[in-house]
Image 1 (cartoon, rainbow, N blue to C red):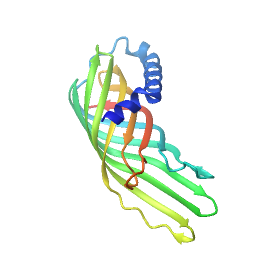
Image 2: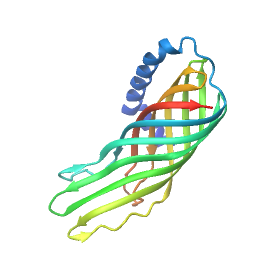
Image 3: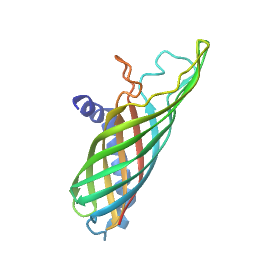
Image 4: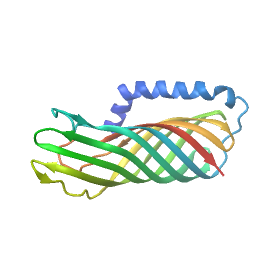
Length: 204
């Protein structure tokens, strides 16, 4: 958790602040007459960018980021607490072509998390999440001429922090930064997936 806090208070913290301010500005006029968020079942749709740490260090012709999409369903118990389950696609998170490696990896994660929210009046809120991610991996290509084996997903922790603006009682926009821990599961490697996203949340 200390490592996570350092990450979001560094460059990530600056980006999150900018993202939250942009979200608040975009929704300010519509949120002026908004009501407090309702409790009930929720559906969320988000899109953004995923980036895998470390895998392209000292590697030529290497890409480690792609578009990310997330869908989830959940339940909001009250303005302060909720739960979500869903699926996040990281896209093609690793793609390299050089003399020794010609391989790519598509990745995603099935997720379950608990979300805590600090309301800032009826219109805005800051939230954090903690949960588990079951990785879904697909490897293709060769390393030194040998075929790459298919990936076996593992379950790892993931965290998130963000902001939301309630445009109506049943509709909100949100922006979030998430860290998915240790995608490859190789000891000594820092291969976390970092995801920036923004989207909509519907409450029924």
